[in-house]
Image: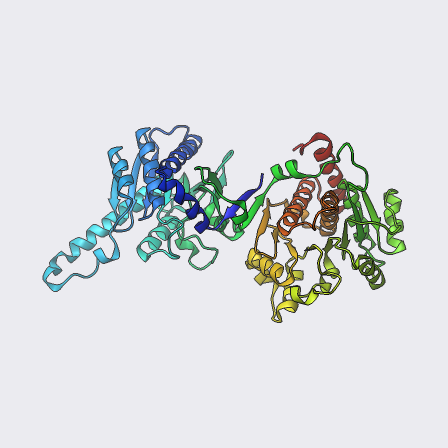
Length: 552
């Protein structure tokens, strides 16, 4: 089911009443972390006993989580080395780790190795030598450990790491390499030691959040690159940004009993479980109109195939009725394949416009038919040119109705350049897909589905939905037309269910669009071109409706 993501401030506030009531949240977190680490070590080594674990700790509470987890691992036979990187750390956690037998290395800080006064100059060489030896000890422990825990900085940490830590991480990553291979169920890091040429299996686990997490490419070599991030209480919004996946690895959420309000969430992650649960199914008392009617204005004399693909995917997605709103030529192609498609005008619960650049006369007719209604529209391809700034559409046919835009990066760049009055390039879009999708949604007042390797769905209030990624086979001509038809069918179906209620709310509509992307993804796993893709949509919808869930 949907996993909601929250700002760190919201999660901290949710912790407050439990902490004030005396609930030991750190015990819950560290216990779950220890169990996870034990599972990883058993999977990678065959057993926990005798494994080597290096724990990097800073001054925050996530250091406490790491230290108490390390103590638990030590009691079960793991060899633990704790490396303190600041002048203080979580004292109770450090004491617990020591009692369990952990070794501790206090890495000298820059102020501890600064040039001393003249009267103690004789000790300079010895001090520098000792600092160098300790640093070498830390690098040796990092390089030979089976598992490394990153408990340096948590959600309260400032951006950037002190140079003595950044350089340590950089040297460690350089000495062990950075290639990753996948093991069954979980990924582990397989690195080749530069000094010996031997390959070692090592897993890096970030505690709550990776230290100095940032999507900025500059300084990436100085940051922790985790195989897993074990986060507590609630999913942090920063962890789901596609640009930080190299630093977070696989994110695992541990429930520690927080009472989080979904209305305070800033994002949602949706996957196949959501599709199985929320895909609309026909009801026993229903009929074709209660299942939704979608109008499709797609295809032209130049691109008739787009009309066929868009209409066919809508038909195959289980909607009650499909109306073909375009040219007679496109309608003949469509009806030749799907006799159930109608060309007569009538009620509609959603309309798709734009795939295949329909001729202007049909667009004008469709706009006239939609006037004085609040029927939702899905705008794709050429229809995106009709979109203006949110304040400028007041009084137009686009006002007072739910609108979904489905651009790829190039189309969004052109749209934003027009809306913002500045040159926006597709490379800027792909460098920050969430940020630009949010800006487009805010500027236009529409739901924006930005297509790409990681599809992003943004609402005007800043909320966004991230569907699980689809297969590479979806990068093919006509794939977007198929998606547009799926979206129209689903929006029409949900709109029909709530036709006597206010229009679909923005966040509800964003979720419906996310379901459409998941249908598209599932079909993409069964096809390698758009012709096969549109047939696969029927298979996916059939399984969801008749079998109750995807058969995969």
